[in-house]
Length: 209
Image (cartoon, rainbow, N blue to C red; front, top):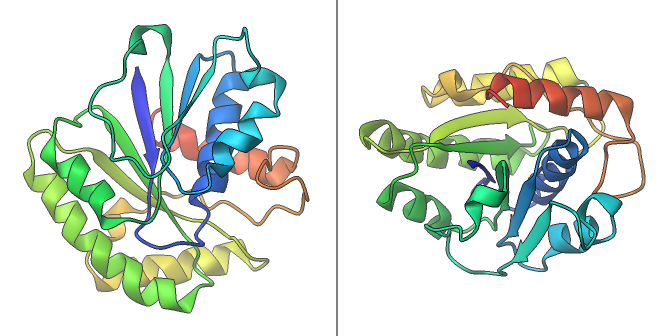
């Protein structure tokens, strides 16, 4: 089972939206998905529970563990192809990742390039985590992407984020795919927006999914 965790050490960047749509997209591809919700409010759990892909009797399951630590074991993992894990913006998330064996994990961090406070803070904090992951023999694979949580020019937003990451020396973590703002009102599910859907597929392809 491949584990995909969405985490950024700041709220409002689109973690839950990203996790929800990745889980649903994989399920629609016919993959067996375990959606693990560690985030406060359990919004991913609520959104997926309303979809036919995660209805009772399907091969997909929602595991709601609000505010719990990152799990080290996944009972029944052989029944799933992917675990998609939504998290809060807690520092303990990365601490948990660096303690255990997460060599098979993909960790993706959405950053809203239109959030000036986030651009000042997040790259600096991710730099310390990326160094820890690099030095750990069993560390997770970390990547960052521009997530246009507000309307704006995608290319300009991606360039702004790349510059901020470059200042911290971690531009190598940035994925080429930037996820555009979705105009659909069915939050947090955005897959009906064609541009968003295409971008999310491209993002997953970049991390080998």
